[in-house]
Length: 345
Image (cartoon, rainbow, N blue to C red; front, side, top):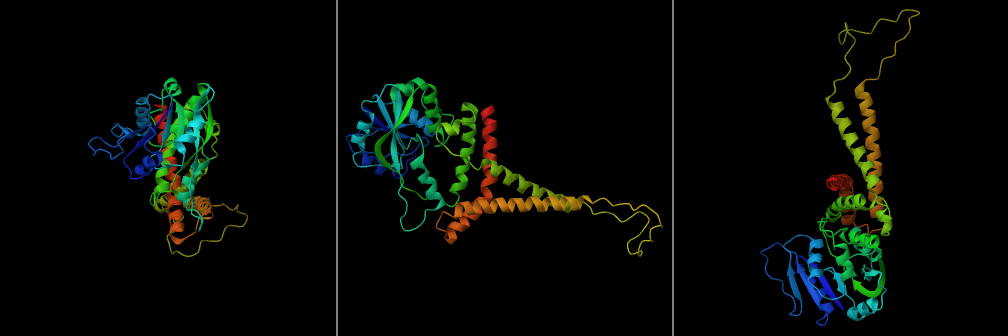
């Protein structure tokens, strides 16, 4: 009735995923490492398909097309199916109406109990409330064939699952949530992981161009900080630009005909109309730069605190939040602009 498809780049956590499934569940592992990599070590009952590094969307397409069962369950290679997952999956799928194209498993992200979660841990925990993630998502093979499977224009493991769900809705299908449980452990992604995640802004642009501005609400997503990031970036650029210009711009020259050090200027004639001197451009630029810099500092401080406040507030975590909060706004905007440009082509 069901075959499990797991795309992988050879991470060690794949062993735990396959071990939790057990030998009685048909499984296809899609090896998406570049050509020339050593063969994966998998149990004998697991079929391996190679895609040569074309990305997770292409890997999942190759996987489901290699199956022959009515249902295909997609799992990530870093999840651990819960006890009795296969039996629960069968119960989730049995008897579903014909217009139901997919069933989502319940994702559980274990967080530390002795402290507040870090920013990275909270990011992973967001999967527990996400709609239609392929961390555990089963689709009818016929529905996949009808909509063409995953869009291989998504180069990374981000938004390709949302895109597929939205196209299922457009085709008139429904998606439901099942009772089976899959655990998604938190992994260490490094100091700069939150900055790398900003590449997903380019994929958001692709979805907006395809489905319109309401795509995020259609999958149950909330608002983002992109507009605030754009304002923060604009203020930072303005502050730096005005500082550079005021450094290069010459000051106001002394009145013509008087040398520096020539003594005080003569008193104005009685009845003369005073002439106001225009404010010099360097002064205007300096004021603008100070205002822009103050705005940048305020928005950046708010962003830092929004990420630090719910976390453990250890020195390392605070340092990480400060450094990455300075970098994230311009990086997010750059990726979004790149995505908009690619979506127009």
